[in-house]
Amino acid sequence: MHNATALPAVALARDCNISLSRIVGTFGTLRQASMRGQLLRFKEGFTVIDDSYNSNPRALMQMIELLSGIPSFTRRILIAGEMLELGRGADALHSQCGTFAAERKVDLVIGVRGLAREIVCGAAAAGMPVSQTHFFLDADSAAGFVKEEMRKGDLILIKGSRGVHLEKVIQKLRDQFELLDDSDQSPVASERILLATGD
Picture 1 (cartoon, rainbow, N blue to C red):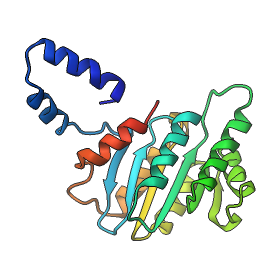
Picture 2: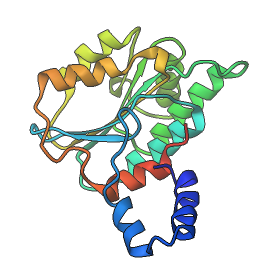
Picture 3: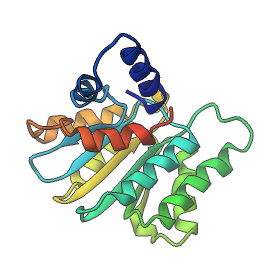
């Protein structure tokens, strides 16, 4: 549940005389919806944040901030799809997100489709080595690269507009690797992701 809807839900529950302890207990059982910040842990030792449902510049930068701030991972990888329907200034908005990723010390930036090329260019212009930036014309091409690139200790954020179909990258990883049984079962981690998603 998004933080914007959590508070009204708490208020309604209290108005219905539901105890605070029961409310808190219920929040602990909530799970992320598919493609909205869902945590996927793989037996091969890498973790994916599947936020592929949608994207906009503010939400992408919030998720990059989250990606860069989670400790105990060896590499942090951004797979960012084109953000559609931004109108005038779309090129610059994509580029700013790439710059932000480089400034937050993301280790690898992968852009998928159209103006996501500007995310890659923005990261490179901000000092990220070109060898750590990649652009693909579509999700299928990106998926083929990503499945070969994953390593133990990686944390991967996948985020883009629905029209880019980044769920294909997720499906390729699911087909190639085995999920741990506890994927998406961490309320604390999921709560942090919920607070960051702004779509």
